[in-house]
Every structure is written in structure tokens, then in C-alpha cells.
Image (cartoon, rainbow, N blue to C red):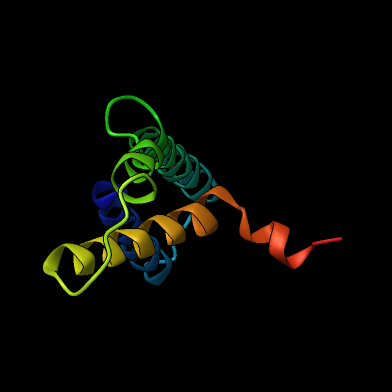
Length: 106
């Protein structure tokens, strides 16, 4: 995604330079936009696989380390558990889309 972002910034700079020289062609914009879209889509699929598939499944790790292993009392383990619990809840609601159930509840 960092590479896609860097290429996107370079593409915008190239567009500005070509527009300043009055040499901006529609083909350059169409091909460049398509390439950047494919790179972005590949990055999104890769991120989704890292978060929810394979060995580094964030959802399964949240189930193992947070929901099934609650800490109580005043300790550093409780603070770590609270932090992990907030991360898991944010991941669950923001990325999976369970927040839409809250908004459109019957």
C-alpha cells in the first residue's frame, strides 16, 4: 500500500507537469488510473487476507486472547487485556461491518 501511495503521488505530479506543458493526453490518465486502481485493489485484498485469513487471522486471535481470556483486578495484564479488547471491538465493528446492524436495527 505504501508503494501504491507513492506511485499515486508520482502520478499526480506527472499529471501536473504534463498539464503545465499542455501535453496531457486522455490515454495517459486512463492507463495510469487503471494501473493505480489495480494496485490499490490488490493491496486491499492482501490486507483482507492478512486480517481474516491464513495464519495471522486477527478475528481468531481476538477470540483466543481476548474473549476467552478475561483479566480482572489491578494489574498490567488487565491493562493489556483492555487494550486488546478495544482493538478487537474496533476491528470487529469497523472492518467487518457489524456497525451497520446498530444503525439499521429493526
